[in-house]
Amino acid sequence: MTPKDQTQPEDATRELLGAYALDAVDDVERRRVKKLLASDGAAQTELDQFEGVVDALGDAVEVDPPASLWTAIQNAIDADVAVDSPTQASPAQTTSSSSKKWNFRTPVLAVAAVLAVFVIGGSIFVSARQDNNVPDSIAAMTAMANDAASKPGSRTGVLSDPQQTMSVKVVVDAQGHGFLMTDPLPTLPQDETYQLWAANDGTMISLGMLGSNPQMSLVSIDASVTELALTREPVSGSVSPTHNPMATGSLA
Amino acid sequence: MTVTETARSSQTVDLQHFLTLMPHFPRSVPPFASGSMDISSEPPTSAPSGTSTDDASDIDGVVRRDQSALARIYGRLGGVVYGMCRRVLHDDGLAQDIAQEIFLRLWNEPNRFDAQRGSLRSFLLREARSRSIEKVRSEEARTMRETRSEFRERPIAPNAECDALQSLTLDAVRSALLQLPEVERSAIVLAYYGGHSYREVATALETPEGTIKSRIRSGLSKLSSLLTIDGLEVEQ
Image (cartoon, chains in turn blue, green):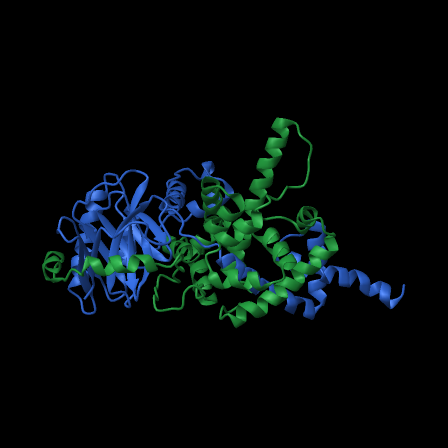
């Protein structure tokens, strides 16, 4: 076998690096590329470069997921935790069921044990679930909001419309936990949701969806956010407002 | 200050101020990382990703069954995972199913993620894309069984590339793709966003497989430079 014969297959495999990075190769080719990568530092370097590009390509498909997605995840985890008999659990379930003590790191998150948690675009939303625990949850959240409002570094505000027919009280503690307490808002149709926005220099940034009939919500609000707006949006949420704000307010 | 007092003392801003903003809303908003929000960052190319420290810390939390750790991961990466599923599947309901499956699998098997092999973002994006492709193929297989039709390579819709480019939410990525030679762009967009193998792309474009492989490789190399020039840091 000539040296040329020996390098040809390797070159052909190297030509696959781009398709491999895109996961557009078959299993046999994938194994060939992995074998090449194990022995060829230059190929690994090239692949690292491609994988960075692929990450960027992936970032470009990002959209706000519907609130129902996290709710579904949460419910599935709750159902798993509620499994009483280990013999009924699958191996994976056994693993998770074996540790049924939630390890919430803060009192704020401990309240989430009886709440539905919505995480939208990095903002953690906790909204009261429609069950028997809701009154207790709201009471606990209200107490925490009052406590937060009394501490140094907290900010407060109210979102309302010009006619003052609706009111959403907001308290943000020094750590950025934002409590939203709504006087009864008009209940939206099932296919719509309230969505909270931060405004900054003409840019509206989604802070998440509150559901069609929110009472109490917890949301992460960064210190740089000073102005808020509330809109009604399709139930899956919007990447930018599709309706004029129903209520606006500032934090101070 | 109590909440009630807060309601009395806080100011309500002018609604008109927000209305004037409406025509200028950006098409897309980047996500926030680690529950911290920096609205002064440079959209649309500055979509923050969790640092490797965030990833490691939160995966440790998931291993300890800390649900808030999973919530933080979802906050950082839920949008890209769901977006990728939706892009490949073209079906919101199926995309939710697969995205849910991916996060539940991470919850139940967090040690499948190996930080030595890349970021959690890369890992979950790969999962989202490959699971979505599997779902498409299983649906096609079911259809073939039901219709008793013969196996054939997955066809690519004529407007697939255009649709994919229009759906992108990062202008920098779209711009970089548009700067590629058309043949390279087509190969990359159809393979990645369409969830097709390079062979399927070759068939659709009536181009030799070797040529498609080369175009993908060459195009990715150019994209690396273009995205860096445009200010989008390409992680390596």
